[in-house]
Image (tube, rainbow, N blue to C red; front, top):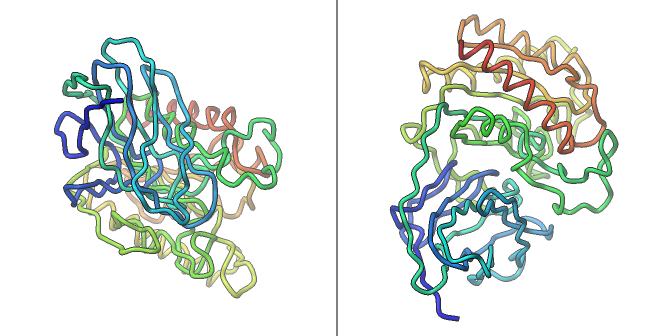
Amino acid sequence: MNTTFIPCTDPRLCYMGRIDDSKQESFRFIYAGSSVTVRFKGTYIAAVLTNFMMSQNEMSLGAVVDGKLIKCVFDNGWDNHDKQTVIIAEGLEDKEHTVTVFKRQAAYHRFEFFGFELSEGAEVSEYKKHYDLRLEVFGDSVSAGEVVEAVENTASNDPEGHNGMYDNCYYAYPMITARNLNAEIHNNSQGGIAIFDKTGYFHLPDAIGVETTWNKLSYYPEGPFSDWDFDRFTPDIVIFAVGQNDPHCEGQNDRDITDPEYRKKWKAKYKEIASSLMEKYPKAQFVFLMTVLMHYPEWDKAVEEVAAELDSDRVHYFEFTRTGKATPGHPRIYEQYEMAEELTAYIVNTLRK
C-alpha cells in the first residue's frame, strides 16, 4: 500500500507533555500521557516508532480516533530496536479525522516517534486546541494509571501476572480531571516513585526518587538524563501526589513516618522540591494529596503538615472522601473517576473561583 509520511517535525502536529524534541529525526516520548494529535483527511493512519524497554511487559500505544479510545499492541522492543509501524486505524471513511496518539505507560519503556504514515494523498490540516487551564502532576503509579483496566479486581488486589496489559494513563484521575476542565496537562508521574532516591520501587535496586526526576526531561534510567526547560510550560495548578511508596527503603526496614527524625527529614525534602517549583511557577496554585489506595493514615497527616509549613496561600491540602481507604490494589477505572470528580469539583469550587 502506498502511503504519505508526515514527519514528527511537521508544524501541523500538536504535542502535549514533557517530550524530547531536540532531535529532528525523532521525538522521544517518556512520560505517561504524553501525546501527539493530527487532523487529516484519509482512510489509514499508523505511527512509526522505535521502542526501548526496561522490562518484558506487554507494550501498547493508546489512541483516540474521532473520540473513540483504541489500544494498539506492538512489539515491545526488548531485543528489537528497529523501526516499527504500528497501525492505529484503517478502513476509515474518507473524510477528516482527528487522531491523538498517547503513551499509555510510564518509563518502563520509552519510544522514539518518527512520524505518522497516512493513506496516500492524505490531506493534513493544522490542529490547534484552546485550553482553559494548565495542569502539572507529580505522582506515582496511581496517577500514571497503572493496572487501571483490571476492572474485575475493583476494590481488590492486583491480578497476578498483569505485566502492563491493564495500564492506561487515559483513565488516571489527573487525565480525567484535565478532560473535565478542558486543561492541557503534563503528567510527570511514575509507578513506584517516592520522594527520596534509594526509596520506593522505581528502578530497583537503585531506586530513583522525585528529588531526581522533578526537573528532568528524560528520567529514563538507561539515560542519559536531561534537564527540563521550565520556560516551555507554565501550569496554573500543580498537583503533588507522592507518599504511597515512601515507606519502602532499599536495604532497610520500611521507614516509619511516626519516627520524628525521619518525618522531619522527609518533610524537609518534600518542601524543598515544592519550594523550587513554586519559584519556577510564581503564580501557580499547589495541591498536595494522596490517593484512595490503602496506606497508613499518618502519611496523610505528614503531607498536610508539609502544606501548612510552607505557609502560603498558594498551597493547599486536599483529601478524597476515601483517601487511603478504598482499595488494597491499584484503583480501577471506577475509582479513578471517583477521584477525578472530587478533584474537579475542588478545583472549580475552591481554586478557580
